[in-house]
Amino acid sequence: MGAMTDASSTPAAPPVPGTVAEAIAARLTAALSPTRLEVANESAQHRGHLGDDGTGESHFRVTVESAAFAGQTRVARQRMVNHALADLLAERIHALAIHARAPGEAVG
Image (cartoon, rainbow, N blue to C red; front, side, top):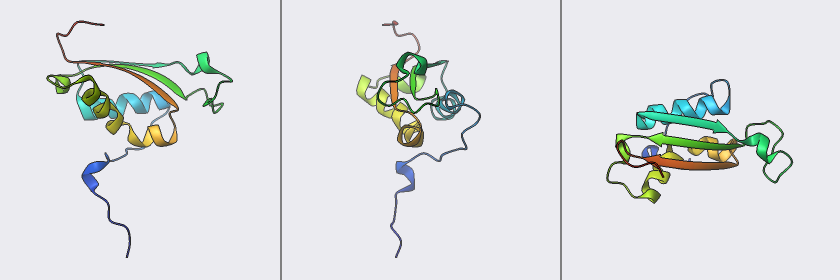
């Protein structure tokens, strides 16, 4: 018998469009309907460091503002982002800095 998995535990992985940054934006948009989304590729700052796979697409910073974060703790918000990007984090992303907030929250 094959292994059983819970389909709700991992988001469906759409194909990676173009760059990893584009895939991050597409997945976060689909999962969180953000009112603001910024994806910064910081890989050049880590060239030659551990985790640099030479592709120039290994280290990212995201700023996400979404109503889905209202009432959620910082840890819960980061888990929501990580869940949306699960396969990319496992296969393509070495490091991800997350800034997540609900609309109307102070930037900080």
